[in-house]
Each structure stands twice: as structure tokens, then as C-alpha cells.
Figure 1 (spheres, rainbow, N blue to C red):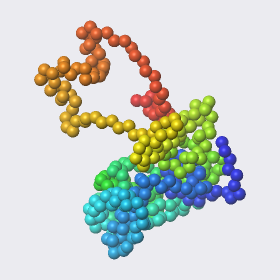
Figure 2 (cartoon, one colour; figure 1 turned 45 degrees about the vertical axis):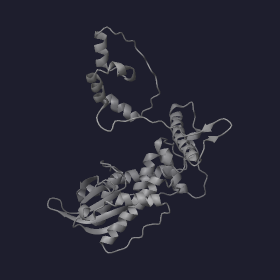
Figure 3 (cartoon, helix red, strand yellow; figure 1 turned 90 degrees about the vertical axis):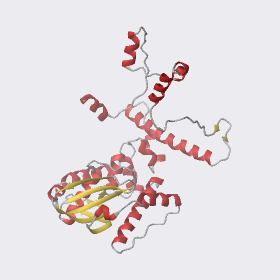
Figure 4 (cartoon, helix red, strand yellow; figure 1 turned 60 degrees about the vertical axis):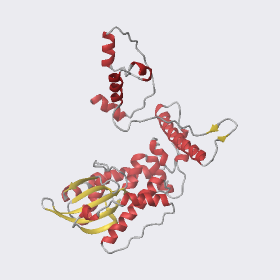
Length: 357
């Protein structure tokens, strides 16, 4: 483990959904971000941010206000963000609900003194024949599908809304791109009762992030978007220790993927293949036919009915399923056992899940 030598002690006085997401993804990332506050502004994030701003401007226009959309120089990002938001129909989305705010920052002091902070993309006052009067928090998403599980984002925002407005809360995720939607309703009592859970979690984050000792890195595909990839301590881990070796392996996999992308972009920027003393960098292209409709089995039946099956047998493959093997053995065919070994790395939770099935 590495120890940080610094004059000023890091202090965690607040947590947010995004900071908790960083912490859950990799505690080391959250630890470093608190000290260096660095972001990796990839295309996906820029499209999402721009789409959120355009969505806010639509809401502002509805209430007779103006919301300035940040200027993004890349026209392709603006174009895609507009595609994400062009289907948004606020009349259908919120109907007659009263708009209380948009892009609204909300803060609540937890019992341990740590502040919980959130930004409501859209918050309205709604009424329902069965639910009564409640607060509707709508979280705008730019992906095709929205998560349909009660995660920290749901709990954080439900508590924040209940604490601020003293009313029941409906939290809704909404995809502007596809219209996919999911929601979870909380009574006021249910939402307020979340405070002890959030408070304990905030205390854990505070303890880990404020510590002078670096947390153990948690490498994986998410490393591709990490702004601290080049300085991650995972690259220096002990290759004789299974846990450290797996972590280092996951980091290098992500790094290799990133370097492959850089090489591909470098080749596309050049008219001809790039030559070095040892290598030639080029794009290998392969083409194959794919059925637009129907299944491969339909072609097999066609060949059988037309009497052309034997002529094309060499081009066909057969899956040796247990049923096929059994039928072939009954007809006199013999089989031998073939064993292939490949590396398989799964999480301990996946392994426990298999054992419990």
C-alpha cells in the first residue's frame, strides 16, 4: 500500500450520487478524485451532459424561463444530444403536474453531520386519486434503457425530496432517447426512514477517502474511462499474489483495449498502412453474408427438399449436442472425449450464486 505525503488533510464533508458511484466502482478512484478532482470527459459523458442541458432548456421554456445550454464545439456531440432529446414530450411526461424546479441542487444534513447532495433534473408537485399529493422527482437519462432497480441513486433522491418537501415521493427514471421509464414510490415515512442507512454508508465513505492509506484498486472494464488510469497502483502489484495478479490483469486488459483503439484511430488518420521496423499497422477487413429474415435452418430445409443437401454438406456444420451424439451413437458412430482448458475468472458472489442454485 502507498501512503500519501501531504500537508493538508483531506476532509469529506458531503457525498453525492456521482461520488458514491465512483466509490462503488473503485474506492481508489474516489480516493484520488478527492485529492486531484480530475475527470475524463469522454464522448458518452459529453453527449449526456449536453442532452441534460437541452432537456433543462425545454423545461425552462415551459415555465417561461431561459436556460443557457453550454456551448459544445463538436457538432457531432450536439447533433446526437439533440437526437436524444427531440422525442421528449413534456405534456405526456408530466401532464398537469406543477413544475417546482429543474436542475435543482438539494442538500440535506445527515445525523452524522455529513451533507447529502443531489441535483433534481426535474421535480414536480403531483396529485393522484390513490396516491394523493406527492413529489415527483424525474431523473433524465440519455441511454436507451434505464435501470429498473432500487440503487443508491433512488434512495438518495427519495430521501432528499422527502426531507425538503415533507411529502411522499415518486422517483422516476426516464430515457429521452427511447421513452423507457421506471419508477418507485415511497411514502413520506418510508423515505425519511432511509436516513440511518445513508448515514452509515456516508460514514464508511468518509473513513476510506479521508485515510492517508490508498485503498486497494478495483480494476475492470470501467478502467477505460478512469482519469487516473496511467497512475493506478494496480500496475505495480505483486504478480505472485493471486488477488493482486488478477487486479493487475484486469487493469492491463483495459489498458490494452485503449491502446488498440488509439492504434486503430492512428491508422484511419493515415492514407496508407503505418510501417515500423518490426510491424505494419493496418486494418484487416472481412465480409460475410447475414440473413435479413428467417433462420439458417430454413436454408437447410430448402436444400433437403430440393435434393441439393449432399452437394453442400462440406459447407455445413453440425453442433454435437447431447441429443445429436446419442442419435449418432445409436447409429454406430463412436466419440472420444475432448478436453479444452481456458482461464475463467469470476467474482466470489457469482460463484456463491451458482452454489445456491
